[in-house]
Length: 453
Image (tube, rainbow, N blue to C red; front, top):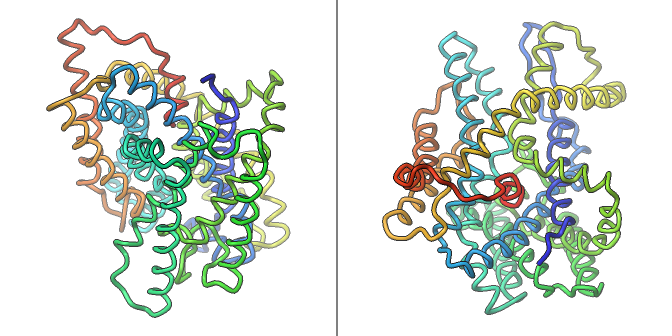
């Protein structure tokens, strides 16, 4: 099957909107004592929660990821690869840049802590630099489950995501009911929806790839878009769920922590719309400039995703700590007008940051090719891959929930866990290369990074 550039477009579009969304809702305020604060826009200006309907675009990323993973796993299995080898290779592609990013942030946290930086400020910065991490453990777990999920797809087809969706919807309703009655004990069950809700979209990517969603016919995507949209409206109107598709502090019920029945409905609607507009976008992608822009965004998607909050800190230090930035009333008309130069400045700073990091990115691509696990990993190497993945996911889950400096303290054990997990995944192949004179597979690492990320 030829590479579908529309899949690349969905991934690039999702990353771009994630970056813009995070920048848009991040507003800085300089307090009388000189400290910088970041009031939560969605909580401070409640109407902005409606904006999340446009910026919560991660269903498209999981859809594209599932489509790409289905093809990749099918090819690997045909070539004699094992589940452990395939999962290990994809995990390393994500974990190497993530570990490098985390290592640099943690180094900065350690230095600032040693210099006596205010713990509250350190905790805020540590949270900002990890706010995007929720996606990584979920995606890594879905990658680990891909062989089993693909087997379900081959047996049940579109009935597999439908069944997962019914279960996820039921859990979402259960969590909402427990919250309304203020009864506990459903947190662990609710956490399953991270895999079920996002897994539905990921598995729909399998169906999209093989044409099960009505390739060339509009009935299925129209039904998904209409039914999902109406379901979402019912669940957030007369239903109990909030409209915001991003976690809002103070709300008793969330659509994202864990993913709710309303999030599931919105994801289904979003997938339907994505399938409906596919022919139009594919025609646009035939233009050389459009295709080139998508390739550039796709090639830098991981770096964009990881580093996009660093410009906020740079601009805060350059303009807010110094008092150079104008500060109209938070959420006022003048404040919104300044969002335009705010986004432009952050974009310029991010371009500069990525240029500085380009040698690091190239080095990581080269390293990934050399240390990726063997595709046919078995036995002890297989067990080490699964163990390394488990430790890494646990560490990333901590960072996603607590940031890099919870309560202003250095997170020793999560930092060690991420390092040990990443090395465990890379070590088996590294040893093998030393024993074979360092030879590597002649594969395009950048192309595979685009597919995995």
